Length: 121
Image (cartoon, rainbow, N blue to C red):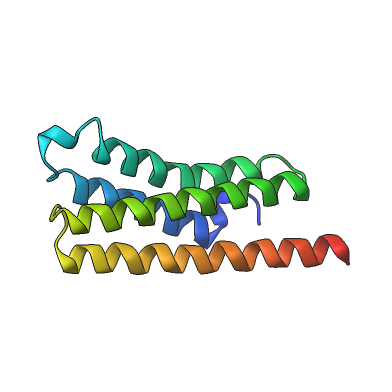
């Protein structure tokens, strides 16, 4: 692997951000500085933290940034639930975004475990 761009989890994170932007463009204008902004920023942090951690060239730092990405992912999931409850997202869109986020969650968790095992070995 030559760069973070080769990581499937980073690519999935970029796809997630793209879908978040598409979904939030129809949120009410009154939410532009509220839920729309919060959700977009949390989603953007996911692939950004993956990339930044990769660039640290330290397994300990990399794992720390991956854990921050998981935190941003959980924040995104929470915002999505709120958006769904408020009727800003239709069930189909919310379900698609939810599944995308859970897949990224599994991938990051797996990557963290692999890095921790490699560091111990």
